[in-house]
Image 1 (tube, rainbow, N blue to C red):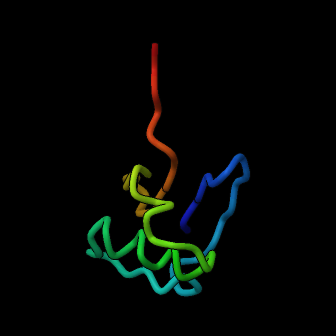
Image 2 (image 1 turned 180 degrees about the vertical axis):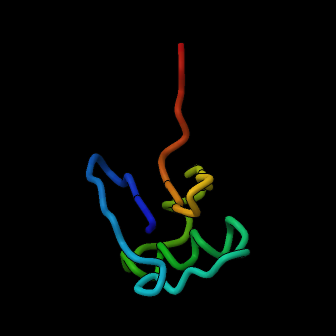
Length: 66
């Protein structure tokens, strides 16, 4: 499962629907997201791809503290 936090909303999308496969690098995953949401790739430039031990992915904006 791929959990995406984008513009204040959460989405849970299967890897198959996004075209994401094990071993893909962050840039390739962000490219698939941009295609899925029909957006420019730069919209996901600062996003973090967090790989969980379960195999799930969490894609979220970079956290800013302070």
